[in-house]
Image (cartoon, rainbow, N blue to C red):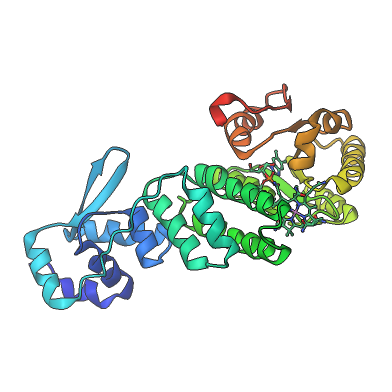
Amino acid sequence: MIDLFKEVAEPSRRNLLAQLQAGPRSVTDLVISTGLKQPNVSNHLAKLRARGIVRASKVGRQVFYTLASAEVEATLRGLIEPADTEEPTAIPIDDAPKQYARAACAGDEPTCTRIIDTLVRQGVSLLRIYQQVLAQAMELIGKWYEVQAIDEGQEHLASAITERMMARVVHYAPAPKRNAQLAILGCVEGNWHSIGLRMVSDYLRLSGWKNLYLGASVPTTSFLSAVREHKPHLVLVNCTYSEQRDEAIRLIHRLVEHRDQCGGGFLIGLGGRCVNEDPQSFIDAGADFSAPNLFVFAEEVIPRLESSASSLGVFTNHKKYD
Ligand code: B12
């Protein structure tokens, strides 16, 4: 006879078992419904599995967990209440940006959370949620702002919610394997558009890089001090607002100057809306590469950085990333 009393007395395991009373769940489902961290959920499930309380079965690329037997189900029924099991309706990814953008501009964070959680549950990757939902929603919000359908306060509101949703998506992602390479990332002085760079930073970190994310509007002198102190392998700069173009070029010149003096071998990558308008001019100023969006950065640039390929430069968008 399995001793379920001990398991049920532990709050996280009680919570997980209550979810499993409702039927099979993947680790992602359980992370979302319990609010526990992914490694924590995996750890508890491994122990419950070793004790014969749950079992795992693979369906496609996902592993689903269920209660191990009718005996476990019957015993649990007397010990805990099953969790509320209402299944959210699926969201087609093409509809998500508009639904999300509307909710974000209205400051409706619970709806944004539901959209994001549903997509995660549907198995949509972090890369696609960032690029095809959040980045597109921000573009849409830009259009609504241009035609004065929303005001600047709503643009700020939506941006703040998006930053929180990104943290949420990262929380569900599997823990990265560590790689010894360090990247420093920051927005050029005067540029407050940090969402795109944050996406790049999160993706790089989940790919195993160590990151120092300096955030929005980093004073050029502070940027250089961080590079001097931490000796990164990669420096990534966002320039979105065209008013900051000259400052970005100045920053590239100073970074190249420092690299020549110290003989350090870091690469300089540029991105953001202003860079995308004329990427070659940033390469001419000394940057090693630019990439127009997160898909291209993830699938074309990171593999080359990790194989120390010499051919960098301007990466362009391909049809397959549309
Ligand atoms: C949200 C937003 C804001 C927010 C920013 C909040 C934040 N925390 O980021 C707030 C409200 C603060 C803001 C302020 C302003 N904004 Co504004 N803003 C936008 C908006 C709507 C969306 C930007 C965004 O988040 N896009 C989504 C991200 C994911 O895209 P992204 O940055 O391009 O990043 C992607 C790629 O470029 C790439 N990438 C990004 N960085 C890097 C770095 C590297 C190294 C690499 C390889 C790749 C890479 O990966 C990302 C994912 O694919 C745009 C409209 C638009 N269509 O862009 C206007 C926009 C950028 N803003 C604009 C303006 C004018 C302003 C303001 C002056 C006034 C205002 N309120 O509109 C101030 C200026 C502030 C300043 N000094 O920087 C203009 C800029 C025009 C220009 N001439 O450059 C735009 C284009 C709106 C417009 N059509 O007029 N803004």
